[in-house]
Image 1 (cartoon, rainbow, N blue to C red):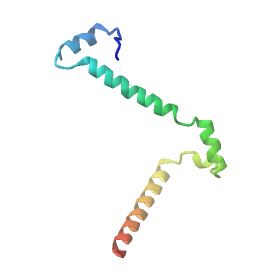
Image 2: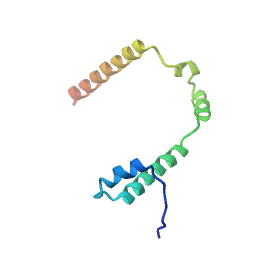
Image 3: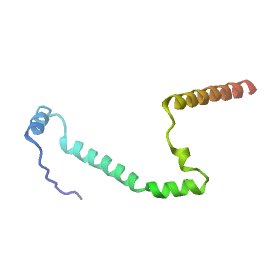
Image 4: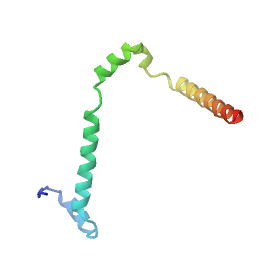
Length: 96
């Protein structure tokens, strides 16, 4: 079953849409609405920040561990992680 839904559009937007009569605008709105609702539902499934912080603290994560590092330190750690990962992958291919 379906129902009609009326929306109000600015004139300039409607004029642009009329230039593309080949587009099924009802379908565009329907799909866009479905995608938006899906994102809203996914967001409602997530924890709020306070709950997440409490859970992390129970696991032993300190609040100061969650603070961002200076960009150069982030870059250094990233490069170290990449180097170690390459070494791990390289080692695993040699062992086989």
